[in-house]
Length: 308
Image (cartoon, rainbow, N blue to C red):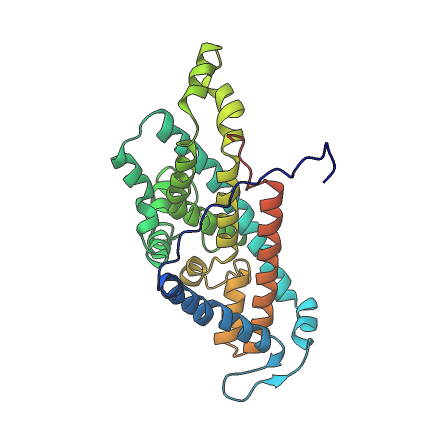
């Protein structure tokens, strides 16, 4: 070795790995296995079967007959399908806007005015009632002949409103019924997001003389973005799958005014026995929901927080 050369720096010895406990891997597999089994049986396998049925003509009583993409070609010229999509989009738009605005308002009031557990329980109470029960309750209350709401309207000297019997009223009525049921649950999700915002930010705002309205737009809403993104994805995907309220109150009527896409799939499969075509419509709905959820998460930057 020549003079002036230096020996390579010594590296610190790697820390010794803790010995893996015997049976640790088997225990992990044991914990995961029930969830994997449930996913495979109730999600993965039905999805594969649905994809296969969407390429067949199948009426349940005979063997499926492979027809390729005929069901998807039929969908392109199916006016009932496109009407169902239009009605569903109208319902989703009303439901999302009204529900999100009211949920944020309720959550902010819960945080700024009262944090009573009793009040929170009352707010979330409608979500604990079955969809069918809620639909029946509002169907009777809003009935044009015997409903208590129309009795109050006519008592004021106004004409009775056919909430479920007129095309202009039926979709907003169904949307508002579901807003009433889900609004409290959504408000609690937003409330949980509000609790993560440091109180010191509001105290600094008060010191600077900011009003409550100014602090809402400059502090609350920006820091609430990840939670709102999650809420929007859950609400949009749930709204596209509305079925119970329509089935109980209108069965898609009057005409096709409230025939949402989920009720159309039910009609095709279990009333017309066109399981293949119903599966194709389901696959298209699945693809639409996947794209909508992906775009929402990307646009709202749901995985980033301004608090970091």
